[in-house]
Length: 116
Length: 113
Image (cartoon, rainbow over all chains, first blue to last red; front, side, top):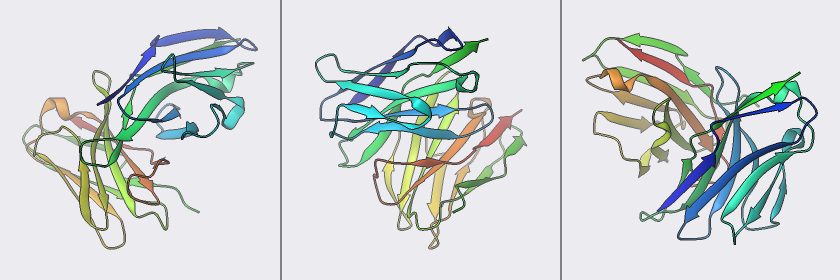
């Protein structure tokens, strides 16, 4: 079984400040981990993914995330927030299930507000 | 290359009716997955189709079904609609079955009255 916990349903930062969105996962097998962003009235866009290669993963729009196995975490960061980063962010885990298939399990999401 | 398209974008139905949603994957993608997004339950996996066969299924009642055509386009059907079926239904396509990278469409917003 696999699960994802996103700490904080709402995060507010000032423009130019550090963005830190927290994600912890649970998986009985080595997981793949993802961060997606969703803008209003749109689908999900992949920001970055971890698939057992480098533990520090760089994504689009200046975001990056670090896989920490000992902490079962995959937190998303961006050094300097931009107004256009305001959106909802989802962490997801993909692991082999009982059927031998992978399926994405999403966290509950974190809404990021960027204050001018 | 065109992205994943979903039709219609918005639907309003009444309880007891049935509905069919359509998804056209990115050209060359053979796997299509469906997700339900609600404020209360978040994003939940419905099922995945590959080569016209359902290959993986989430924990939803049998009222939710789908199919995939030979051109990889997929439809999702919900019968005997309930108020709780109101949601954003997202389709995602990927190159292969269980691929670790899925591309999402804009979704179909279903409202059940």
